[in-house]
Image 1 (cartoon, one colour):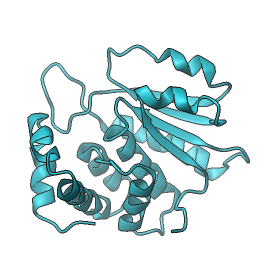
Image 2 (tube, one colour):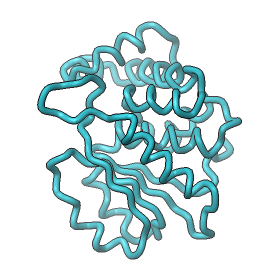
Image 3 (cartoon, rainbow, N blue to C red):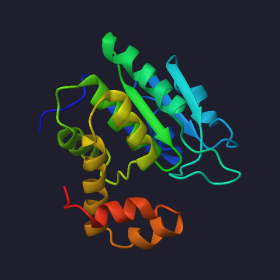
Image 4 (cartoon, rainbow, N blue to C red):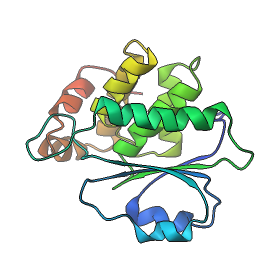
Length: 195
């Protein structure tokens, strides 16, 4: 399958960061919980451009937690826009969140959709799954980004199909995601076909 990104993209969780110190990352999008310390491993990465965002991996407003906002999504899109506009010859983007499953894969989806505006949303999401097979993109982030990119709900629909696909191959995710308050994503998965 032809790559959908004009530069290599790595998606991972915090525990995997150390394995990417020597790959020549030029850009890092770091998504952390608000109180989580900056991973010390970044000191081993060499010179790179970095955007750090801090919010919880939730899709609804929850008292005492910071939900992804339009501003967070605007910042990650601006970071991606600059990289896509003039990628350096050595461009390699690393996106991480806590587990490399939800916030980071949503960010990757939106950045790739912005870089490739003529590529259909389903193809973008397939590319995300090719890069990170356990992707479960944060729906709130996808909803904001879909609107900002003028994708007319197609990224949201592709995310719904991805949830259905993941539940088909990993049925235990249903109970896990429900326990995290991600009912809206589960309901969306139940209402559409899979990948």
